[in-house]
Length: 544
Image (cartoon, rainbow, N blue to C red; front, side, top):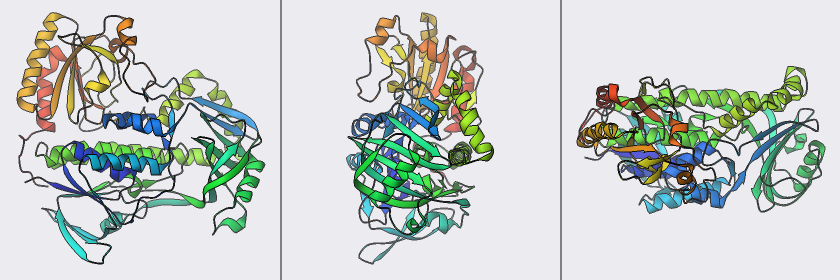
C-alpha cells in the first residue's frame, strides 16, 4: 500500500516539499490554516543554488522571467563603500541573486503543484499530532468547524516560526530576539541607484538596505526607527526621514505598497526529525535577513528530504536513510544562523571592534579577488556540501568534485551516439544518475557492463549515462541550453570533472554527488554502496 505524507504549511518550503514529493511519485496532502495565500512580498531573495534546484523541477526559467536579477551587492560604512561583491562570475548557470516577491514564489510553486494534481487545502488547521510505531495521527479542523482525524505515514512541518507541529513535538526553539526594531517598505524609488545591484548603508550603526524589485520599485529595510513605531507601521514620511539620514546618495520614496515593522529572531531546533515527523524551513530555523538566505535554506531543506522520503515511501530504502536529513541539513542551518548573526551585528556596529572590522578590515579583504569570489559563492550557497554525510562515499580521484559536493554543470558528449549534452540536464530526472566518464572504446565497453548491472538491479531509481569530453570549444558554444535564466556557458567536462578516466559519479536527485570512484577499480564498491542505500526491491514493506 502506498505510504502517505502530510505537509503542514503552504509557504515556499511546504510547496517545494510537496512539489518534489509529487515529482517523485509520492502521494502527499498539503494543508494550511490560512484561507488564502499571502499577497505580501516578504522574503525576496532567491540564491543561485536555489535556482539550480528549481531548474531540476523545470521552474527556474519561470522564476527568472518573473524576478529581477541582481549582479552585485554594495556595503557602505559612514558614506564610504567598503565592499563591492559581484555575482556575475559565479560558477553557476545563474550567476546572480534573483529578487522576487515571496507571493510570486508561492504562486509559481502552487501552479506547479496543481499541474502535478496536488490540491492545497486552505483553511485546514492542525490541532494535534501523535505518533506510534505504525503511523502518525493528526487532528485537523476545517473552516466549517468540523474536526477530522487522519492516520498518515509521515508528517513534515513547514508551518513557520510559530509551528504547531514543533509545539506538538515539544521541541525547544532555542535562540534569542534582537533588541532592534526594523521597518520595511516596498516603495517606488527615484534615484541614481542601479536596479541590478543592492545597497546596504551603515551610518554610525544605523542600517538602511535597498533591494531592487524591478520596474522602479524597491524593498527598503531600516533599523532603529523612532520609538513611537514599535506598535504601528511606518508612514511614507517616516521611511523617507530614515533613508535621508542613512543613505549617502539622494533617494525619493513614493507610492508605498506595503510597510511594516518587525523584530529579528535567531532560533533553531536541535533535532529535525522525531520518528515519523520532520521540521523544515522556518519551523526549524529563523534568523536575520542578512545574506537573504532564510527562504533558500527552507527550500533546500525540502529538496534534501523529499528524495529520501520518496525512496522510503516507494519501498526502496530503509527509514534509517531519513536520519541523514539531520546529518546533512543541521550543520548547514547552524552555520547560516551563526554567520547571519555575525553579519547582522557587524553591519550595525557603531563602535568598537565591529566598526573597526567594517571600516578597515572589510575593504582590505574585499580588495582580494579570491576573497570576493569565495564570499560570492558562500552568499549564493553554491559552496554547500555534504562531504561528512554518512550516506556519501568517496574513493579517491586525483581531480574533480568530491562525493558530497554539488555536481557542477559541464558540456559533454553522450557515448556512443555523440550527442552533445549538458550534465545538469542529464541529471535532472527525479532519480539518481550514474554519470560514467570515459575517453576510449575499451572504457565504453566496461561502462556498458556496469550500466547494464545498474539497469537490472536499480533501473527504477537510477539512470546510467555514459559521457566523454566534447571535442572542441565550438561544440560548447553551439549547444547553449535553451533557457532564459541560465546566462553562464558551462565549462568543459575536463575542466569541471578532472582528467581521470574512466570515472563514475553517482549524482543524487538533489544535485549532489553521493558516490565517486575510478570505474576500473571500484565497480564492486559502487554495488556495495547501493545495496546499503537502497536495500529493498520495489514495493517492499518496511517499518520504522
